[in-house]
Length: 109
Image 1: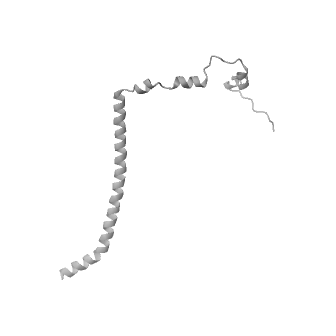
Image 2: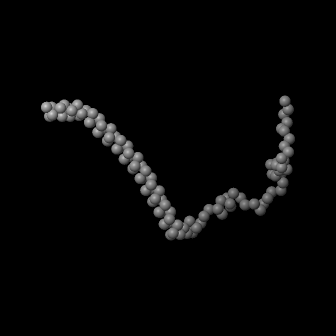
Image 3: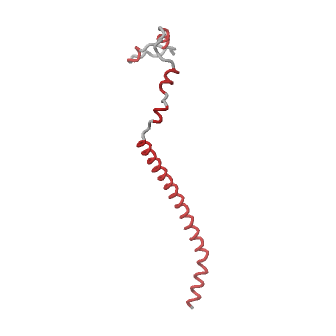
């Protein structure tokens, strides 16, 4: 088995190796990472310049989403409680039914 890598024939073969790029002359005109980060940080003026209209729309959208979430949770909780109440009522009726039938038969005699 050979230890050599297969020969590539695609267009990426023309790209320089990392050692070729690093070995060249240093590029002094490139900014450092801290300079790039400092430029990208928004100024307080930019952050505060959100218009009142944008704030109003965002507030309305948030309120709609909260209402929808609360309504969904409330519907689920009410559904669960309704099923529980029905199950309890049926169980109670089953326990009372024999006595109700006896009373009805005795009353009709």
